[in-house]
Figure 1 (cartoon, rainbow, N blue to C red):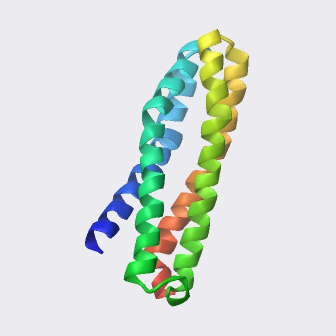
Figure 2 (spheres, rainbow, N blue to C red):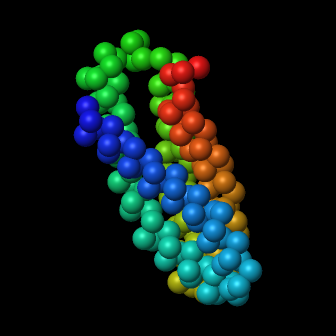
Length: 151
């Protein structure tokens, strides 16, 4: 159980922390200092390095979370409402990430390769909006996971 909790926590820190850093620190600086070709290329390469970590986090979060629910806590009927909320919001986050990965991120990659900066800018803006939503949900999940059992 300790191993599952550790993997679960580390995966959530990597995913939510990575979104926080990208959205709150990197995005404003890149937007204010870099022209579109460099900014879009930067983001394309940043996502290329970050998204494999997110995929790993998604797999580990689902696997460890379900394992803990089934083996450690006795199934969904035995866990508190905070676990149901955490799982539901986590699934929403995963679906949003998958949409980002398979749609606007792929458009961004193609646009950067083709040097279609306006198209790339639109894709990056869509990614920004979806990451803002996912980051907000992720922060709520962190609070629910940490304090939910005390409510």
